[in-house]
Length: 289
Image (cartoon, rainbow, N blue to C red):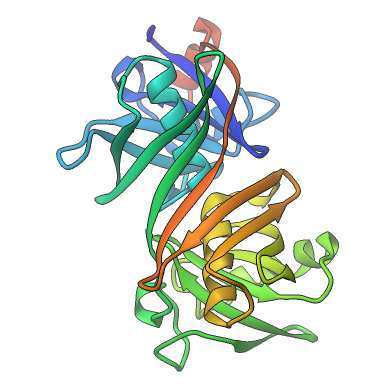
């Protein structure tokens, strides 16, 4: 990779810019991350995936949201990062490990099209419904089907951690306007100590759930891997679906499998959008902020 090179890819419409820390000649401050992610003044994306060294895995990864906050997990980001590693020659293996803030993630390349990675399977870790592990300040140790009152409405929610915190709201009808109105209010509740990702979910059958997503540090997104994992686990916990679930989002579908010990495996597609080099003008602009 050349100095200051980037690759932009998407997983079901959830797009990320991939950078290699070893090729950058500038530091990624919060302001610079926000500028690069800006659709008008930068490249535009839902976040940045930064390849970094790791002592415990084959590769290290830092995931930054558009507001420059660090994400603890990201299924779409992991598939995008896996594609980047193989397509750009960092590894010729179909299986490898990725370190996200000390969490070891196993990734596997399942399919290629015209020599480029197209489908990736990721072992997403273990789901937890324990309040202290989400982290969340609910009165019960295990967070299953709590009632949350926001403004003038009551919501049936299940809170779960899949490495990052999620609040899954069971709905009969999915309205994006309702999500946009109430999800930010849910995120602002003091019980969510480190903030929370919000999903509105509608069960279509015992093997399919449709969702809408409002991510912490990003906002409304067309797709999310960790959100899909969280919803699958929440619906299984409430005995509404089987352990192999299709999660349908505006951007497409992901296949989620959850075993009896709550180990999660996610499978889905990934596509590259563009690759290039940050211009000298862009670097000069970044240096001024």
